[in-house]
Length: 198
Ligand code: VGL
Ligand code: ZN
Image (cartoon, rainbow, N blue to C red):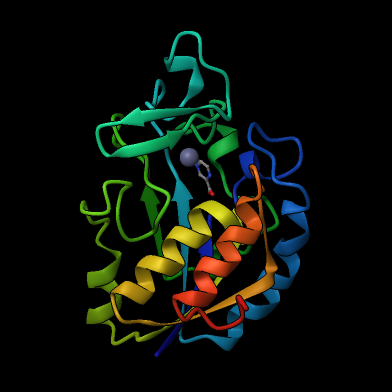
């Protein structure tokens, strides 16, 4: 069983949003067109409470895109984004969300970020997606979405660690590219055996 995993195609990651990824909206129509080719379609939704600890606004003297040390490791600080229930957290209006079997939300714990669809940024607290996939007999994943070098990469690497067969449609992803993070992400994914990332 082969699932399409659509990462964070939300207003705040598209042009005009709080953490806009260049070209983020360009991938929406081709992702919709791909959905019928899969046994399952799963969407992720970045879903932060107000005052989330990944927001620079919670760290006096810090600006967005600066780093801090968190108990679970280094963390990039972001502009406030994808706040639960806001228009910015909503999916891009053209994304065909009705086709999704499952929408998995992440980043809802105030004290820890969650880039990956599988684990929070401590690499230990599960979102529950692994169990869902296994109980449905899904063993192959194709990943698309935003952002290539953060949530897509973390999801792809965790999926490989968990033993799933993983392919990236790099043409249907867009990156943030902070200090070369996009090229580094592609290399990391290729080394981990993510097809389509080399
Ligand atoms: C993401 C930064 C913060 C992503 C989410 O979807 O890649 N990036 N939250
Ligand atoms: Zn986020």
